[in-house]
Amino acid sequence: MNGSKAIGKVYLVGAGPGDPGLLTVKGKTLLEHADVVVYDALVSPQILDKINPQAERIHAGKRRGRHSLEQAKTTQILIEKAQDWAVVVRLKGGDPFVFGRGGEEMEDLIAAGVPVEVVPGVTSGIAAPAYAGIPLTHRKYSSSVTFVTGHEAVGKYRPQVNWEAIARGSETIAIYMGVHNLGDIVRQLTEAGLSPQTPIALIRWGTRSDQEELIATLETIAQKVESSGFEAPAIAVIGNVVNLHEVLCTTRPAVF
Image (cartoon, rainbow, N blue to C red; front, side, top):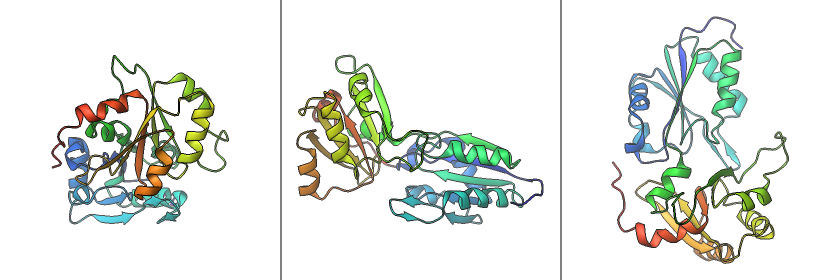
């Protein structure tokens, strides 16, 4: 680790889920003035186009089975770049603090004596269902929602998500990164008491112009995924609010 005092600041910026129109004004301003941008795989090309043309770009994306940079290396790069540059942006898809490892990176930066600031972004678990005409809460259908990851890290603080508690405690469930483990997740939810007829929506490339939805029930979703070839990345939404998709998804929001 470079022991010299940092001259710059690292900004953990949420890029939002894909539609560049959902990037915050503060995030856009930082990209336009950045000296270095370390960005993730799921950041849309339209948002990358907003980066200062003179800025150094470093791809640190993580996709299942394909890591451009290991997490420790990514943090080390941020620390080193802050020794030489005033504005270092760590650009993350969605929100840095919602399944984005932003908390881990911020801890390490603070421990290294690097000034750091988080700039929140719109998370895909809210935006993707909204663009699909699925409100996560609705007075007639759901007064509670749980956000949960379907892809857990090895060696984490507890061995697994308590799907039984989630099935019993929430009327809407929004699952990030759950497509690859969907069969096991559905099994645990139904064993915990959720009806096999519970609606589920998979939303791929949420808020982008090529957003796709797959609507089914817990009983039929595995077959539909296989027959359609539906793939990650996608958000899964489970609950009766999914039934509003047919009513509310009459037009596509404009993607700027």
